[in-house]
Image (cartoon, rainbow, N blue to C red; front, side, top):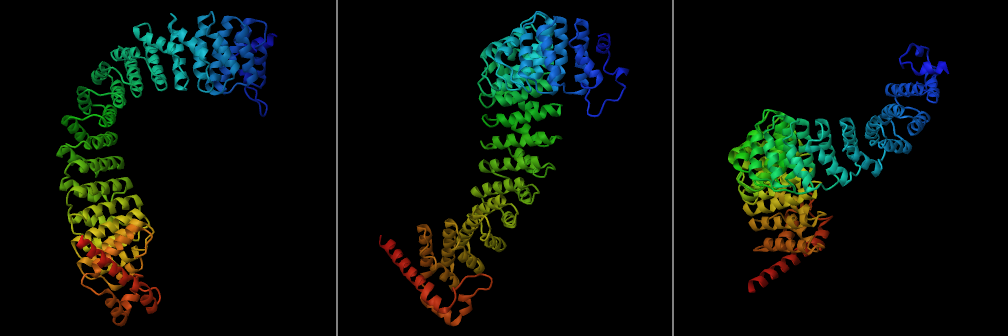
Length: 628
């Protein structure tokens, strides 16, 4: 036994360990570890205590402790003297940090929270804090931790609050009476560390539980605590609570006052708390203005938090012109995250209109920002601006350049913004040409927005020939939304000017599109083209081939188109004459695929009668409308 005792008192880095371990041996299974394990059962209390301490050091240095040794330690904890029990728990803390613990260990630690020794209770609270990561803490154990928060010894209170915080972090349910115990530490009964940990624990618990109004008031007062860490925790807790419930206005005002706190982390957490509160609370104008002023804070982390908060606030609150100006200035901040958040806030604010021109200019300048996140949010903000305010020519030019941006989301938003401008005002020809070029974008969603913008622009502006050619190509796009809007743009273009012959041939092909609206709009465009002048006979033949389209809306559009072509013309004579004189025009337009499906007999016996019959029906419909 004397040998075992001497081993138990040796340090784990003792020369006794210089002998190489056997292959496959662990620090717990080599001769030194086995001797320590035996010493845990030694009849002498001091020997057992030293062995426990050495086992803890071994676990702290070398990792996981075998379960059979853990079980021996738990047995000592349940049956040995208090001075050894405290050492056992200290030895189990490294175990709780790195490995999943057993239910027996959690139960033993829970019982130790009621130990007569303060050292045991304090160590047990620390050990439970680390077990919360991998093991469910029973509710009665959390209740006992709440009782320890009321103890006089500061280390016991501190470790108990630490354990409650860790339990809350691990999504354990924290009972109301434990929350009340945490709240009491703000009354001056706790040290700085205890008050700070209590605030952090409340913050985590607030994510899962409703907090009483009295607690929110207490946290509001804690924003003036002498310790910065306590103020940080209080601000974070208020933010977590405010996400789910309304908080008193005086607490929101206290957050506004705390924006001037001397500690930058307090200011950061206060800003975020105001942002979180904006969802369920009306933020007073004074607090919003204080946020705007904080965008000039000398600390970049604070400015980023403030801009983020204003992004949230702008969703449900009207921003004053002074705050909008501050956000506009923030678009030139040295920090990309500040610029990005500011653009996001302006996007929400712009939906209410009244955006100052200088701020719109700042957003336009941001489209050239080196950070794509800033450009993306700035383009998104300009979408909202364009829907409610006039966009200056200078900013439109920036949007035009953004159609070639390397970021797909920037191009997407730029096309959307130009479309919003085109919805209410005329856009310059160079913008239309840039949109036409962007129809070749490699991203389908971008091409869809581009085609929509062109369709809107075609309402007020004549489409240049080069852009007509791009729209003609877009009628064959793989995206149905692109084809539909290209057909719509061509239909509107046909109201202003005669379409090139090549465009009518592609529209004729679109009469066979799988999408109903594409077919309808193609027929409308052909009809408008026919109203402005004769369309190729082959296109008329194509119309005749779809007079029996399964969709009534398409059939009506086809009939109307044929009716417009029939006004003052003998369609049947034209087609027959084309057979004799212009056979190639009817049967085979090179590269177009529009014409007779096989032979003259097919034309005369198929599409030709259909065209003639359709023309007759169209005339009858026109006469009927006239008589009505």
